[in-house]
Image: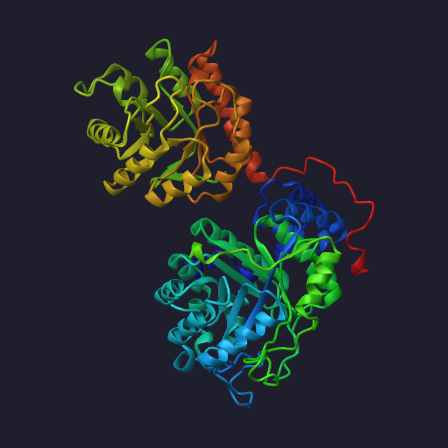
Length: 369
Length: 255
């Protein structure tokens, strides 16, 4: 399990090592045929800032080599904001007083229809808060069955489940699981996630092993940028990704670098990452792992997303509502966070075309399940 | 230098040697000694297992030496398992180099029989080192089947061509959870150095030493470069090429 592996990496020592990287380290990393985690650390370090242009060119090269000039489109569907956790940065924090929604199967179907009216989406991401009593595995399974006829690829972003839970959902048509570790800082993790199931660091970080063991086709990872030193956190994620690739080599992977957005509760980020640094991080990740899917959500601004889609990002969401029922049932309910890119899916697709790329709606088929 | 561990045993030397093709047992012994190797492979078929004082064996064994019996000559998994059991009894070791090459011309390993035999031998408690094509997926399958290391070829056995499957070996080295020993095809010390600089955990050399003008000096040469290659890998090689700067900036939008 990865929690044991992680014990080999000291947070402070890793931070220090990143900041000590030199131009020679960066040049070595840029020329490595199979970059190591050490190379990755050089590429995200301040020493790599003057190499941003070369990194962009290399990132674009690898991205085109593996993905061509295509962008995979997906859309999230929030089906409940009921949550027993009290994550200090999240709008769904149980202490935020508002009426919680758990969509019924009929309402979920209405949402499916509403999404299909927006654009020909085939990749759907079902999202929940964490409240196993009202929205556990059984509820998610039902939701998958409802969505199945409408979409060819179903992913979930829900609380970590047991291996049996993932297996059961795989039989219900689940393809992918997205789960953000938020931070790999074991001690600080507890201060951001003080209560509820999510306060258990090991259970969350080992969830990825359970996904791999259950044979989930695609695993999505992410750290929330705004909590701890981002360079150290993404390095831990790079270590985690490499570990997962070696252990679950049949699985596909995606990574996300979500920047903290304004949300109910008003938590202010502890660290800020600039556009330039986020671009550097994206290029570094592509150079580190040529095949990983890099996802940019509507947290990011339109112009930034449009530029990054030719340089390393490989999947985009569009038209997203981060509130349950937001597409049809409850257009005005409380959102998890405020989006930055409010363009319609058609407008996003047009922007992709304008850059000489193709928006791909369908890249999976039910027969593979 | 990092220690190499296979099957719970530590090795100081990352050069494994073979025992075939030498003009005499005496010369073989001197070459093995000069190589500093701690892992020597020997074909079960070459040893008189009824005679514990077999002449060849007597020339190989010395303190600290791990004998690696190999199944050369078998044609399928069933024969390989039998051979391995015989070898365990005769040499009193769980180490086995699994070689299944039904084709007598190029001696290329059979991946399907090798996987089957590895599963069975791992189940029987053997420390299995399978000789295989440089096939990254097969390596992962063998790892799951319980192999203690993988031994992909650099080039067809005996050809002395060096590393002709570099891109595939690089993938194997990058993805493997067990030690990667480049076996077969290494014809010159520079080939072994290349494998070690790439990050291979060890190399196995036989023909290049056995048929050299002076096998003892050649063994010494291989020993030197294998150590140097590993040292270079751990030290982190410097960048090789200058990086061109694009004329139309891709990152101007960040200014």
